[in-house]
Length: 188
Image (cartoon, rainbow, N blue to C red; front, top):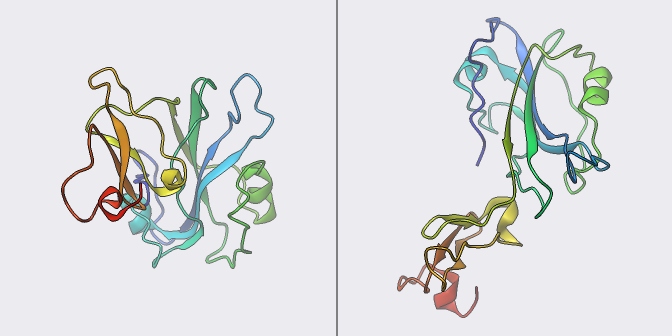
């Protein structure tokens, strides 16, 4: 799964290549960002067509860090998830691999300096905070596969998070009767 990060009003140059980064500068909280920045997504060598569409197929770009869902810790308040676009100075770049098991404490500015990217040519952000998922909505998957987030018991006190596969969990009151749910295969 990758996010859609469309260029919007950004004047994309036809023959240019771009780097797109998504970081959380508010880790573990905006009040005390001692673990900032958290690298949630990083792609390079994005051509103008893909940049305009905002869909970065890992087969068509250099996916340096695969997308990691925003997942602010409980009681940490709102986090800004910032998407930055850099124009690559002169064609394709051979990026050094990053250790994607360590995404905390990364510095997007230092990365941009390392590759001579200059200042961002575009940016946007959204905010989110830790919340329990509503009944009948997705409660985990992707990076949340190992630790599904909670289900709100406001609508249904029996709601719990059931796993269908590594990318999809759902808040339900009971295990679905279909075979493709882990709870029907002796695990959850």
